[in-house]
Image (cartoon, rainbow, N blue to C red; front, top):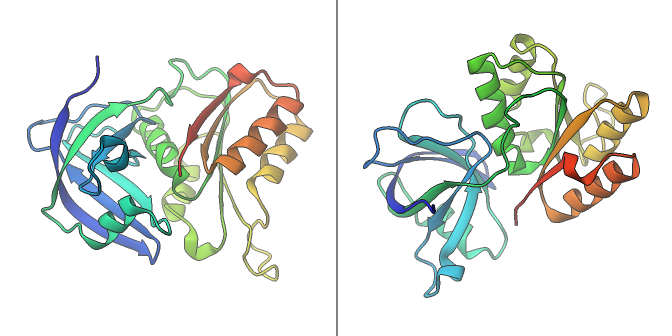
Length: 242
């Protein structure tokens, strides 16, 4: 059964950098907005006549916390009507129709394999939700690798939070990689996400599930690499954006 459209109210907006904003949306008619970590919501924005022109879907970056407020983290797309509206027209108190939760990009019922969360940019959103949920509920799990790619250190999202989580969640590894950061900075990992998971899988080939979220080019390449290393396509879960 499809979720109905409900009124959402922007309760808080925070600037991460010139191209990324965090939005907190309250659903006033509900006392609790229930969802599974990894799911998304769709916003009906006043940017066109037809639904296909107006609807924009975003992964929920927060975890289910018993409230009626969810967090989205959104990147400004050049020429994108949806993000132009969100970045320039929305303020605290603005209301938009919201539908959700939706999607099956969620944790397995039993985490009995290693998990590889591979993402770029705001594709970290569903994984942040999953990691916080795992920590809050102390879920049993194997190794979890969060492999996050972006261009520069200033583009990092939730980095302090994820670094802190490595100290409190057993067998959780946060592995960011920066494709355009100064090579003289030897304290960070340089390059793209692909070399990170390939290095792990070339060292050992664990029984694993792979969750990929980000731009299509990254996902296509990661999927091909993982299949070429002998994993079944059923072990690969995708969430595209853009």
